[in-house]
Amino acid sequence: MIKIKLFCAAGFSTSMLVEKMVEAAKGQNLEVDIQAHSHANLRDYINDTDVALLGPQVGYALAKAKEVCDPVGLPVEVIPMVDYGTMDGQKVLEFALNLYKKKGE
Image (cartoon, rainbow, N blue to C red; front, side, top):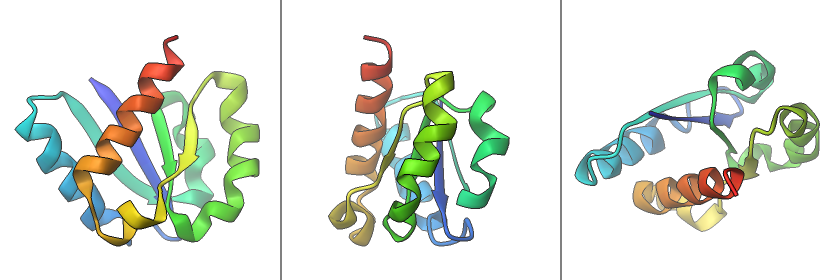
């Protein structure tokens, strides 16, 4: 089970994207746990996450997120604006899975 967490300003705007990602994962029979949270709570989830994604609206916080995530080997990146804006669950899922694969290399 791959645990993917999306972090945005309040944890609400990514909820729709989470649903789209879950649908895409089901279509591929992937075992994933995808959740949305406020980026202010990132530190609370680092030990229970395989990939952390930031919503574009909090992309400014990437450097700070890397300070928290890098020491524990947790990949963290900003969701591409186009994929976020179009709520493309398949592309964001692929983005997350690629980060997960890179982590294992």
